[in-house]
Length: 122
Image (tube, rainbow, N blue to C red):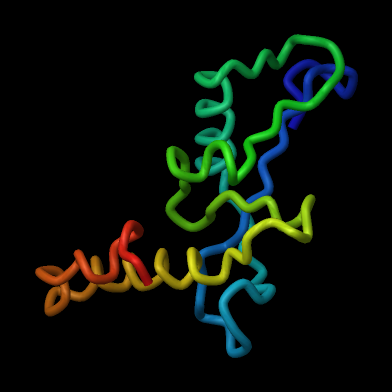
């Protein structure tokens, strides 16, 4: 995203869908696209972290390594895998996020969220 034209300080956030509904596996292409509310959330978060949209040149990167623990969207998470093939495999994070969201929607499991939450070990 650019805040002041294509010569301005770009904002980069590589997002990965949390959907596990794919018939193949977690992290497979699922045709999910960020909604305007997601884009607004990315922009708001970046502005609070020092992104100057009017500056000239360069890129402000919201990396998984630096921001994933503090920033996550309802349907997407940050990943470094697109830029860095050696970055951690995000599959486990996607599965945990999906299980967490599924448990929140299931009244039977709501009392047991500690074993599927985003901070759970596995």
